[in-house]
Length: 189
Image (cartoon, rainbow, N blue to C red; front, side, top):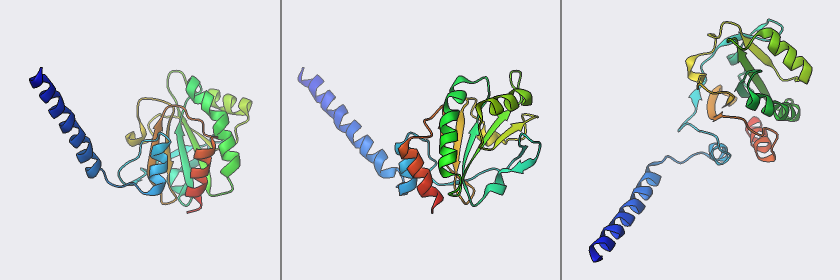
């Protein structure tokens, strides 16, 4: 019994120090990045240059991600057949309306697959009345592999310098007061 208690105490102490050690080795996050982390986003240890790509908007005009440098970008990958994607889009529209004049934009990219066509995207966006920029990757190969997670929706936050600073896999309440304030603050930097 005494030996078991001693072993349990040793394990408890070791695990306590292991946690402390890991915490000491974790780089300090800047305040903005920490705010994203607290809201459930994945954050890289330091900003990553966003790989550029070019896709057509729904009118067929080719647009590059890099052309939005100087704005904060919510880059969202979605599909019309994806229920969580459709569920988050009304909140994305609210966020866009709230911040579009403050150096912020949304780029919603859908890609051709066996269930997705440009016609379906056009029809869905028109029916729902979304005004944020929507793009369609006709070849499903224009977007670099860096952005592919195998799951949609997936969203990336790109700062004004064109760097990925946060990623989120799954649907999100984009019109929440915390994320709206955070993106407004990021846009005003």
